[in-house]
Amino acid sequence: QVQLVESGGGLVQPGGSLRLSCAASGSIYSINAMAWYRQAPGKQRELVALITSGGLISYGDSAKGRVTISRDNAKNTVYLQMNSLKPEDTAVYYCNANLQRFGPGPRDYWGQGTQVTVSS
Image (tube, rainbow, N blue to C red; front, side, top):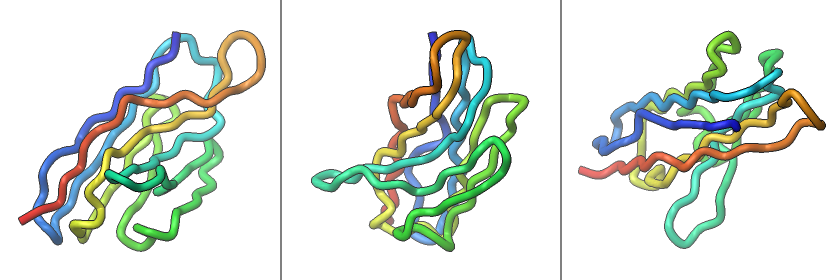
């Protein structure tokens, strides 16, 4: 089995910072890419940032310029550094991994999400 566990969410004041972590565990052969998505109440889930195992990075438009994604491939962990947070950043943040197990081809896995609330 594969499990993605997010951590680092919480309550932060506007202008503050948070660093989210997501660790993938289980029988994993390789991870092709890991990403962060977020979903606010009443809104669709949107991409925040994505990084491949080779280090290629893509950012969604909403938080671009205020977030930085990084990864530690040896630890199967991805991080999201968020700065200058705004109330509109309030959402559940989900970790996503496209990975290859010891079997058929790669597929996507999702974490349970971590709540980020930006409020004074």
